[in-house]
Image (tube, rainbow, N blue to C red; front, top):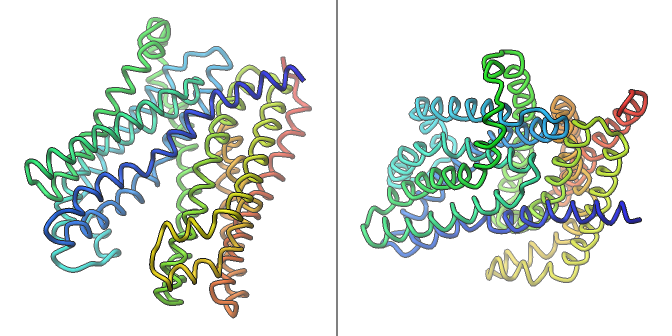
Length: 440
């Protein structure tokens, strides 16, 4: 019991800064919306929303830089290897991709705007936004690597500090560049790009002990030139990237089908997706704790610690999922009313609210096992289970089309559940294999 209590304390010590960091994630968008929302024309706000969606999709696609770095760092930490090598490889890859995005910006910009649409005036302003904000790409991707490294090193307060620094500096620069110096959309983009570099500087400062301490003095520099570890890092990141593309495909398809059912359904589904985002942001704290603890146990070669980490993070995920279910049941309608004051949207969202009560039961296992798989660097298995679940989603949606939006939400819940079940089956097989291996 004492061992479980100590492990629970470690889990919460890792999770709470990440929970708080996730809770502040929407602040960047709120700051941008607040400053342009008071300008003379709504086209400024529309342009920022359009450009912001481009970068949300773009940066979310490269979130594998955080996941892959966490897994390799936590395993190196557990094994007593030099963790700085992992970070330097991840930073090198991040900067390379960031520079490539800047060079490819004209093609990416025009393709994105063609897909998203909008009036000529809004698109012209969105071009200005994209042209400036893309300059922050190297720092934005490097921040993924730093955050992943910090989680792998069990130093989860650094991501919280970085997030708060980026959001506060972005808000301050928004006010200066837009309200004081009147740079409208360009000021918002410049503020966001500058905030990424400020966050990067803060992350390097707060991680200086891990970077410039004994790890730097004992850094085996010849390892940086070895191709095999970099190829493995890129392979893991490739698999996580493909998994992310499959995930985004389902969400974009879900939104598109909702739009086909009418504006009220589209708007109501956008409100209801907030429930899923709240659940995801809450459970990600325990998933990140699982990443750090599972990777550390694997690096140490200690099967008992590995199974305890998986069991206890899973237990806390279940507890929070039940609390979320109760919270959705009691606070679902007030949250809908908070998010929209239009009667048609409120009534439509409330009609489909029962599907949200299923989400904590169907989605939680997948969120938790994402952390377990990242810590174990089972990127190929993450990719394969996501692809299989995604392939199952479309036949289910096709068969339930007569149910309209009810069928769409049924397909979404079954997709979430199938992903969790597939990952649980894969992990069980892997755990059985681990038991057969000679560990320390």
